[in-house]
Length: 330
Ligand code: SF4
Image (tube, rainbow, N blue to C red; front, side, top):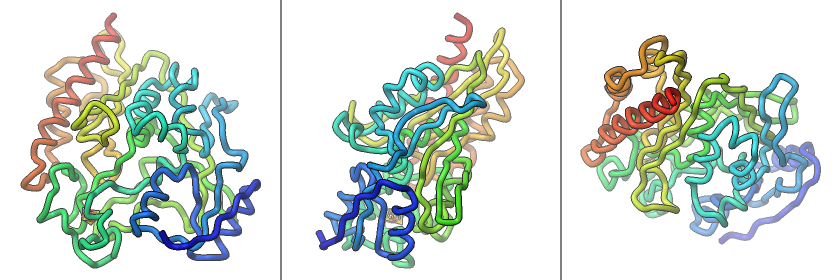
């Protein structure tokens, strides 16, 4: 690991100033991804600004009913918070489906959103990777890609986003709040992650030097139910092969609204807006769930080795929507 300076700060403005004054400075949250990348020589910051002691931890309710989760709240605290469990079970389930207990005790909300892909070529400096070295090529497309993207990928990158939490937040219309030296800003999570296109190294819409300070979640409909389900290659401590977060509002067998996001299939949490539009204002039947899933996945462009993900995603959408509709009928 290359030598680096370390600073601990107590005020957001001090953190912003330190990052603004030096290109090589990075924010350090729980360090569960960044430090690994530093050990592997993928990241080489000259200075780390530890943000864990900023007054940004905690979960609170805003006057308008939104839930505000501070950026340095640990993943464990998010998953265990009574209001998260009561109002947004999919979020609690998603966080608990990620990593291990030890990692969740360290990892922060802000860091979780900004974690990098686990594409093996990205993590290997000897391999071509457009995300790590712009313009160098993509080793995965003609290489080992069985766990890569099937939706929204490009010829420049087919990496997937590794976060479970972000998938649930995408389905729940979360807004990311950040701060720069110019002030406070907000980005809906649906616009937070950029399409991969021909610039896979540009991953988010955060302005340069911005620090994520919180996320906010709108109050869900009283009768809606949410669920996160993850398929992975082993029972724990594995990234998603395909995952789904869904929030379904069904009344008397009639779908009033559906919000669906998929994980493990794209460079960002994939909001299934085509499926949602087809499901809205119609009966909650298995046929309609299947048709919505098929319509969403008609946009898939699998690589030779990962077409199985399309079938898996389809079956997962149908299974989770059926489960939520059945619970609404109880
Ligand atoms: Fe790099 Fe993306 Fe290709 Fe993986 S899929 S090697 S991250 S460019």
